[in-house]
Structures are given as C-alpha cells and as structure tokens.
Image (tube, rainbow, N blue to C red; front, side, top):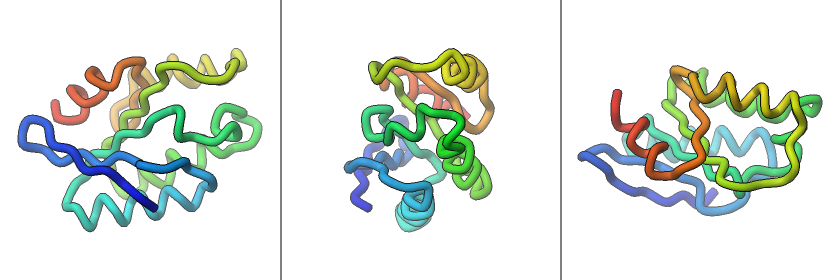
Length: 117
C-alpha cells in the first residue's frame, strides 16, 4: 500500500496515498507506521470504500479495531462523502470524542489533534 509521510511539530504522520479496498489494508497501514517509526495515522474519508460507511457491513468496526490493537492514534477526515445513514452519523458523533480514533471535518484540525498527545 502506498503511503505518504508528512511532519508536523516534529512528529511523523503516515497517510494513505491510495484507496483502501479491504479490512486487511489496515495491516498494511500498521506496517507502514512501524516502518516509518510513527504511531500517527491520518485517513482521508475519500480513500475509504463505500462499505466503511455502511455499518452493517462491519467494515468500519473491524478496520478501526485492527488499528487500535496496535495502539495507533488515528484521525479520519470526512470533508465530504456519500449520503450517510443515521447510524453512521451516530458513529461519527461518537468518534469526534474518541481517544485513539477521532473523526474530523478538517485535515488541519486532524493533524493538530494527532500531534497533541
């Protein structure tokens, strides 16, 4: 999986540079974080598959759980996207207060939160 590495306030942030297609892509992102000596991951909502937004598919839960198992600090930026169900909006409201996984509408805010720990 192709990733992009950026730096903010002296911290390395890994972000995905191509679309995520399966839950197992989380493992590739984890490996990229380890290879780059970073525990900070930034996800772009536009890179996530439609299944991520359908909670009944369990994609979002399984994907986020894999990242949490490796104690990554993950920010997901949802600027725009497909029509979202009420259940997914509930998921986002909860994720906006998360400790290890947090949802944002601005990449700037997401990066600030990632390096604030």
